[in-house]
Amino acid sequence: MLYNLLYALHDVYSPFNVFRYITFRTAIASVTALLISFLIAPWLIKRLRKFSLVQHVRDDGPQTHLNKLGTPTMGGILVLLSIILSVFMWGDLGNKYIWVLLTATFGFGGIGLVDDYLKVKRQSARGLSGWSKFGAQITLALVLGMVLYYNPQDPYASKLSIPFFKKWLIDMGWFYIPFSILVIVGSSNAVNLTDGIDGLAIGLVAIATLANGALVYISGHSGFAQYLQVLYLPGIGEITVFCGAMFGAALGFLWYNSYPAEIFMGDVGSLGLGGTLGTLAVITKHELVLAVVGGIFVIETFSVILQVVSYKFTGKRIFKMAPLHHHFELKGWPEPKVIIRFWIIGIILALLSLTTLKLR
Image (cartoon, rainbow, N blue to C red; front, side):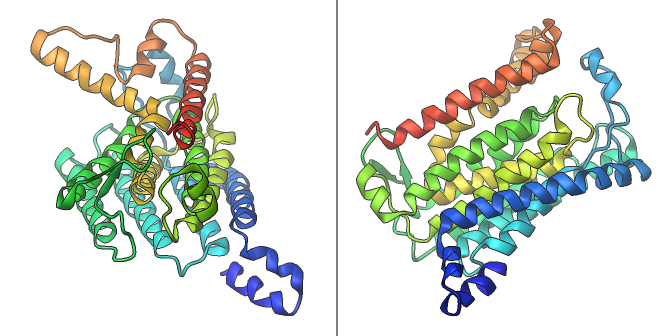
């Protein structure tokens, strides 16, 4: 809204012409979201504590987590709100991809919000039933996948791009719709599984968003896309602004979510941010790159799958506890060490994902 208002004044006062540049609005969106998240968090923490919307801690987890009991949760509301408000201020709301991402953010965040509320109300780790939760996620992902698949302006709607190869595309036909559901729902739940210790998930989301923002900007810029021989996707450059807002909101929240956390984002944040990352990957045709840039999320998810399968068929556990970050905690690693080391790996994977632009 502010973008349209201020840019309209460029005929009267030429400096307002700066608002036409995506890079400028991305920077402003990032700062705006950061400030909203950073400044409102203290007030939100007090309100959540006042209404007893606090974290339930499982007694079968690491014993060091018992001191987290009573920490306010559902802070993801603030992260998502910061993103949405910033995008509404600085994004081009005439761009359809912006609305697809806003739908993903609001929709998956809404599912997480209901799940969080039920957990708090019941004072247990049991929120939505598995079928209800996955059913809602799949339904929303189906809607998003169909909107993108039947987009007449996207010549690559049904195609899968293979990293490290020059425009090597696989036409998946209608099968691309269930594939997009797998990417979006898988990403949402992967971030949710990773959100188990202070600041780990939100820090990794910030790293992944920054790398995705670079990929999006290049794919949406005809000159850069041609030079680097990547797919040029008209219209997606605008969602760089969305990535900027998401990055800023994550950093602002991380200030209060870092160890020892003053607030947790809950499922409303982890499901919302994860679903948004997955949707972003589908829009930009970086579905396989997402598995690299979000490699920690993938590893955490597979650690849970391997643990469940191993215990079911052999009666033995591969890890001391899953997801993987709990395994290292039980091995004696202090929580901050686990977090920092996982962030370092996340940064390395993000840099590796950017090499897909040149190594073709």
